[in-house]
Amino acid sequence: MNGLTGIEKVTYGVDDMSLSCKFFSDWGLNLVKDEADIKVLETLEKSQIILRKTSDPQLPKAIEEGPTVREVIWGVSNQEALNAFVDKISSTVDITWGDDGIPRCIDPNGLSIGFQVTQCQKADVKGTPSNTYDQIFRVDLPAPVYDRARPLNISHVVFFVEDLEAHERFYIDLLGFNITDAYPGRGFFSRCVEEGTHHNLFLLKVPNRKKGINHVSFMLRDIYEVVGGGLHFSGCQWDTLVGPGRHPISSAFFWYFQCPGGGQVEYYSDEDYLTRDWKPRLNLEPTPENYAEWAIVGGLDLETRRQKLT
Image (tube, rainbow, N blue to C red; front, side, top):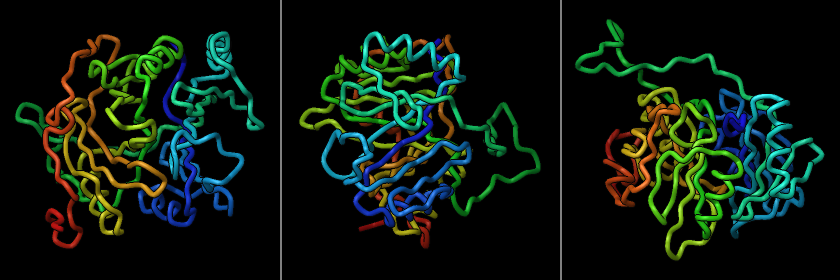
């Protein structure tokens, strides 16, 4: 066991601080630090999005041109586990210690990653289950209609890579992530925990696509919040990439939006919960139907509650 718990912080280098801050505020995050050179926004579980200008010298080196994710910080269960983890990997990779006390290294993409004792806290919220033919969870209680989303955590990140094998050696062999599923030669899903989320990290190699951010994903409490949150965010005039829809790979309902910080962001809920008994599917075909069982291009319109038509 590596003691990792999940994603604590994602730092963006952005061109427009005000626009990017408004984007993540509309997304449902709480603004907890508002200064000229840095904005920090939190989910309900206290995982953080950090915004800095692309020209800020405090930012790690960018892995692609323009606004993009500059760093991912992973949580560790406690100080003893953190010390043991850093000792284990320091014989293989160079570790640097920042003024904030966080040990950092560089992954094969050139991305800065770090590790800290987790600051995340369990949120005091409850989702609403769906009734099935044989299991009735909701009795004399209608499902909710949400007026917006309040993300619980930063659940996973997805990056394009140029050397898939090097990333497998780094994240799986060295850091101890668990492979969940894989597209041979194209990408693999992995989780830093033994039990829980389907994936914290998806690394994808695509022909003629250089390394960079694909998307950052935020967990919501149930599928109804995905729809309500997506409608609200669309009504704030942010552009949908695709969604709502459903991923058969993780069973999750999703909605993706374009992000001024680079790549996309995703609302999602109702993913598979995995344990050590999970058998990785290592020969999945990278087909459209494996990406999305169904999906709406362009999203839904807040006013008409119908598909947006261009």
